Amino acid sequence: EDETEQEEKATGAISWLSSADWESYINKVKGELRKSSLGNNEGLSRKLGLFHKCDKVLSVPWNSDYFKDIEKRRLIGGMEPTKDAPESYAWLGHVAASGGFRKILANGTNKEHTAIVSAINTIGALSHPIDWKKLQMSLRSLVDLGPTMKVWGRVLAITRPDLFCTISAPHVRKKIAKQFDKSEIFLEDVEGYLMLIRMIHESPWFNSKAPARGDNLEIWERRVAFLDVVFYN
Image (cartoon, rainbow, N blue to C red; front, side, top):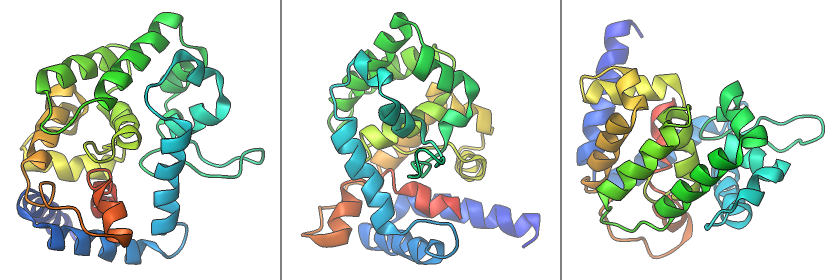
């Protein structure tokens, strides 16, 4: 593909995002999962496994002791596997690759950890329709710590995958930023991320009725986070 074709494809994908119904959305997710099942990519069961583990290990409400546990820090940061810890948590973004974020997780001050816990617990307790003012204040308190929404978006996606998505991958941000005719940097700030989440929450697929059972229900319950599957390839 040349650059023009790639841009048209990206713009078409975003236009589809705001207007697709649930059937179109789930078919797109499953189609991309089939493409991704080769090579080093994880299948659906591995992706759902990450959410199930986060539900168990990083359950809301958080407390500051979470940061003392290396397994919890690996989950929060999306760590790649190591010899001592062979399980990969990198889906949705290896955001601990940012040295600043890894330092906050492992060696942050009590004030920093308290700010993270407070914001995540506030966001974790939100319901749809969103209290946008409360969300904005919580996101601003997180960004004020240093990392941008390309880091915090992943944390939100593992905490409330029914409401939030990650924008950690550069090509994902590029595709999404085109929808708003904005720069990727705009999307990394609170206002840009909120604009994205508002658009998602107004879409037909987001507001669809829950499927009865099975994989489709598992995906529906985490439907916003699964956008990473759609835009990653």
